[in-house]
Image 1: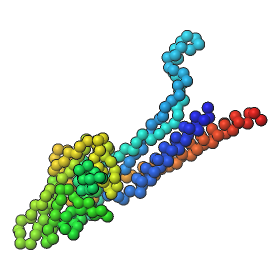
Image 2 (image 1 turned 45 degrees about the vertical axis):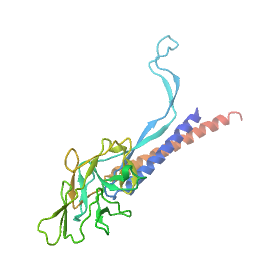
Image 3 (image 1 turned 45 degrees about the horizontal axis):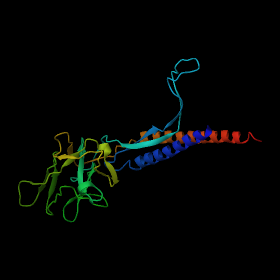
Length: 269
């Protein structure tokens, strides 16, 4: 009946509306360092079974196919794309990009992340008033473990394996501060997005494997670089057009079902 078509088209409009929100968010973050684009996954809903495959027909033979009418679509989830973004040279000694897999660790409230730790691919760090390395954003999340740079440090160098070396007056050899650690996950797509370019651990992501950059599958650090957003504007604009057209077609389905119902209602006249 046309009522099923109305319901199916309605579910399509709802799913496409959510897809439009996801595409818009991807495009809005095209310049956000370390941002990872999301993809919408769809799945069909339940089916009305009118004829079962293999049932006997009027000739006593088995039906080779069945007769099913679907009831629409829904979004089953959004899937993060962890393809590495381009590395952009900044020339700033405290900017670091991860070349390969892994996440930098920063401190957050216990209510936000398990153990007060969140993870990010954005390595735009600066120093706070205490000399600690923090993310250069409105919250200033501290790098974990905390690294404090002396106030009189004349130069700062971050090596590929995470060693932070500083030179202070009166010393000929650079001083090594605490290492920058990297964490990897078995299923990074299972991480929870909490804003601020941060992810937090979930049961789906698995527990983090933390250690020195450049070993055991962890990426190495590139100082003086930032990882750009991995959003492909051309791809997202094409997806935006496809979503718009699909929205229009589902609207046409609603109009067609409405016309059918109107015709049925007018049969009594």
